[in-house]
Length: 510
Ligand code: NAD
Image (cartoon, rainbow, N blue to C red; front, side, top):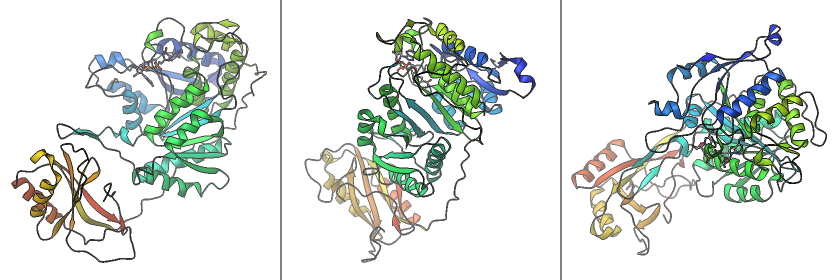
C-alpha cells in the first residue's frame, strides 16, 4: 500500500480556494530526481495542489503486478482528475504488460497531446520556428494488443479502428486548434494501402474538418508526411494521426526540436488525464543528478492549464524560458556558445525558482490564456447500417503437396458445395489461385475466400459484392466439410456489404 498524501504546497494560498487533488508517481530511473525538482518548482510558483502519491513501475512489476500498478493505486487514479507520472521501466521478458498502454486504455485517455517547439539558439535545432503539436489517437490501432500465432510460420496483429474513436480524436484536434489559436490541422494516414482502417480515419477527418471552416485542413500519406516533418517541421501546426504513426512521429518531432529531455505530454480522458515527460526512465543517468527535469515540468504546466491554473502555468513556463536564455543548462542541452553554467537536476530547478515572476527577453513570453471549460467532445450517434453477409474468408494452416496452391484450390472447389464457390486463395494477401504466379513465395497461412454461386448480374453500384447474400448455416456447413476433409482452419472473417458497399478489402490481384 503506497497511497499517502505527501505535500500541501503553499498552504496559506489554499485558504481562499480549494486546491486540486492530483495523483503523482515518481516511477523508475530518473523519475525520483525529476519529480522532486518539478514539485519544488510547482510549490514555489504557488500551484494549488494536494498530492496522493502512488507506487508504479519496476518494483510493482517485480512484486507480481503484471501491469506495474496495484489495486490501491487504481483507486487513487479514479478519484482524482489528474495524474502526474514519472517515467517507468518495463522489465524485459514475457508476461509484463506496458503500464502506459494499460493506464491509457483502462482510464479512457483517448488523446495523447505532445506540443513541440524549438528553443534556438539556446537549445540547438535546425528549425528555429518549429512550434507544432502532435495529437495521437491513444486507444486503438495496432495497440489493441491482439496478436496470434496460428501456424508455425506466421504471426498476426489485429488493427482495430472505430468510427467513434476516429471522431473523438479528430474533433479533439480541431477543438484544440480552436482553443489554442492554431490555424491548421494536418491529418496523416496510410489510406492508400489500408483503405478500410486508415481510410475511415481520413474519411472522418474530412467530415469533421467541414465543421471548422476557419481552420485549414490538409492530409498527407504518413510516409511523405514524416519526411516533411524531419525536413521542414516549421510548416506544420497541429498534426492528428493514428496511434502507431503518432508514437513514431512524436519522437521524431521531439528529436528535431532539440532534445527528448524537454518535451512534455498529456493523455486526455473524460474523467482523468495523465501528464508525463516524453522521455523514458533513462537508467544510464539515474541517480546522478544530471537529468533534465524540463520534460516533466512541461507536463506539469500542461496539467495546471488542464486544471484551470493557467496563470501559474505561464509563470513557470516563463521562468523556464528565462533559465534557458540565461544559459543555465543541464548536460543534455549544454553547448559551447550558449551555456553559461552547466548544472545538475536540482540546481536547474533552483535556477527556475529564482526566475519565477520574470519574463523572457528573447523568447516570446507566455501569456496565460483565459480559463475556459476543458475541451469536451460530443460524438454523433452511430447510424444504423444495412449489413448483408456476402461470404467468408477461411484461413487454413496448410503445407500439403509442396504448397502448390492449385492442389489446394482444386480440393476446396470440390468441398465448396452447390451454394458456395471458391473465389480465390491468397497467401500473405497476394492472390495465388486461380491463375497465381509460380514466383510468389507461399507460407503455411492461406486465406480462402468463398462467396455465393449466384451472381446478381451487372448492378449500378460497382462497390457492392456482385454475388447474392449467403447464410450463416451455409458457412458453418462449409467449415464442417473442410474439417471432415482434414483441412485445419485456424480462423475465419465474415465478408459483409454495409449499405450496399463492400466492407472488406480485395486480395492483391483479385
Ligand atoms: P530514454 O528516454 O529513457 O533514454 C534515451 C536517451 O535519452 C538516454 O541516453 C537518456 O540518458 C536520455 N535522456 C532521457 N531523458 C533524459 C533527461 N530527462 N535528461 C537528459 N537525458 C535524458 O529511452 P530508453 O533508454 O529507450 O528507455 C529506457 C526505459 O524507459 C525503458 O525501460 C523504456 O521502456 C522506458 N520508457 C518509458 C517511457 C514512459 O514511462 N513514458 C517512455 C519511453 C521509454
